Length: 131
Image 1 (cartoon, helix red, strand yellow):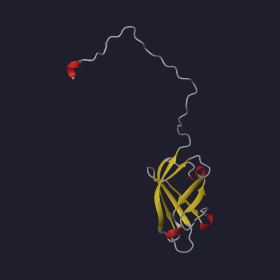
Image 2 (image 1 turned 45 degrees about the vertical axis):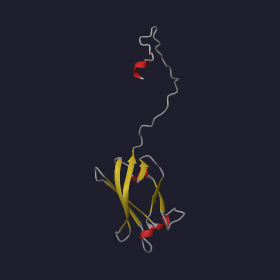
Image 3 (image 1 turned 90 degrees about the horizontal axis):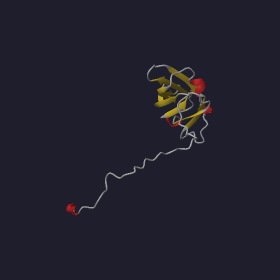
Image 4 (image 1 turned 120 degrees about the vertical axis):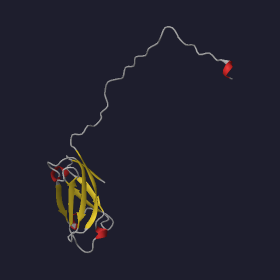
């Protein structure tokens, strides 16, 4: 599963495509938003591959802030096609919003108030009748 933030300017897209093609082919990426069915497409070439081991996996850098500009956040399905239209890979993408809540710790010291009663209502005593 892929995961991008909508305001990322560079995100690595790691997929396994080369092992399923024969010869030279472009990679056509197609992302479909699950709820709205809006589609985003782009193409990468084998020359765009940044992988150190291109026979094992492929690595591309994309700019989600441009590719998904104006698109809704949430779950997307993707597939990658070769020049013949054969599906090389498919999966899910979670596109996160740019202004999501992130927890931050408070800088204020914690103050604890402890209640200490003056008289004790119950005094536990050992009873031999339960032994």
